Length: 614
Image 1 (cartoon, rainbow, N blue to C red):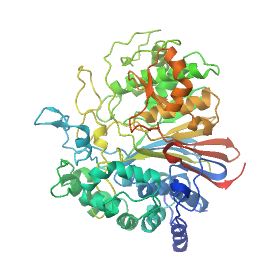
Image 2 (cartoon, rainbow, N blue to C red; image 1 turned 90 degrees about the horizontal axis):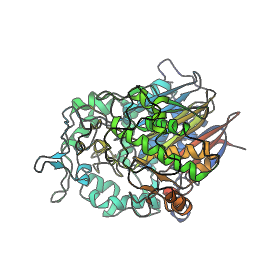
Image 3 (cartoon, rainbow, N blue to C red; image 1 turned 180 degrees about the vertical axis):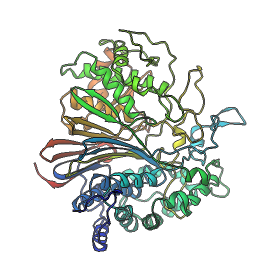
Image 4 (spheres, rainbow, N blue to C red; image 1 turned 45 degrees about the vertical axis):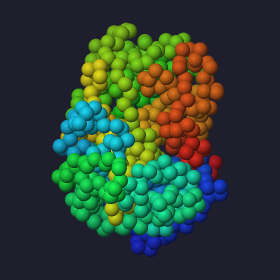
């Protein structure tokens, strides 16, 4: 077994081992019926066993993580390798052009650490960056997305390097080899990837390097065909040789900046693709951040999450604090769901008012997660009647009354792109990584870096485009060097100092409610983790209506409407949209782990363990 060096790195594997690892990830076959099993191993939503475990949306990524664990790598090594693989097989939601957040449990110290690889705005970006100077109004959202203006300085490569230096036992070049093999050999296109490509086809056709990569022959690749990405394989190979620094002070940095400032648009296209503001100095100045995790106690457990600029940890944590102050539902599913929706409604009001990049705005994080503030907010929950949204935010000022009425101004829910991905990994030593990553919108900005094989993010559209019309303060307006607010919520639940649950999800602003509802299902309603993940979902984000999947409406809609909830079908991503696509782990003691992915949503996920066994 290889030991961590003082710098967090080891000498890596022997060349023969590298070749074997590459070969094992390339033998790809189409799954029956175009299902999501892209590798030679059928995707399974649940696995139980020993020696380590992983859950992701993709079997190639899960298999990559398991291979790393079997060869002696730890959870952080496996998470980075699987993240790189997702950059190949899930290029519309992950890759070198984006960023993410990691919550990590270090078994040796029994401490939780969090890592911020969020993208940053160029230093010349101002508050009115998304205001059209010709009209004085915010840019149309689709026009803002497909532009260089929407691209933040990518954080992924720097974050991979940071994660491995801090807790890895393998070098980045070694861990990129499986992804290189997948990119060279190709992956089999499933129905989900075909549909995602078709949804983006119109704008992809207007960006030649994106068209050439993802629309072979000018059309979305057919289900069952193999999509190769030799440009990304070459990019990963160069990173393996030169290190992550190449992406910030080398030719790759220049290529990214050139793409942002001079978007490669098809001559004669009528699409308006605005240039961005990013410079080489902006890229060179990028630094990933380490931050203290958020932490709340719930039902005798410690729940850790991601601090701002993510709003995941603060909003999940505040909602749990509110739920902890409400009378227990005692197995009454309708009452538990009512409480969950009301706690989420209140926590979202506070999120929108107070949470932003703490380097640029004063985020009262300690007070947002304080018991006193939770009591003030919980007293507003009527157990028999839903509140009317938008509810105003509270005042987390440290001076709390038994039942203070809020006096702030309610704000509208800003839009966030829903396309993100999450993976969870644990190793035999007890280390656990929860890694949520994104390029924001499905397909990001639509801009592929020519010759490099990856899309650039549109994370800067997570900023508010303009101050609220009601004059309320907004902590999430654009600014130079600022990180836009995120809803990514990698979450770790710890019992008596040891991990109990690890969970995360994609879904834009529904990430928070997805993670929160899974915790409520598991901890309050007594579901096992597979049932908690599979259960129908609803999302309340301080909007007039609670939006829900059809199965949720069928089961609970009438009872919740009787309590005053306006329950409507969730259609933010289309008529058959689902809420989230979660992945999770549960730890049973004695080294036994249950890995859980979605059985149905987005065609299901992939859960694997090193050694299966009950």
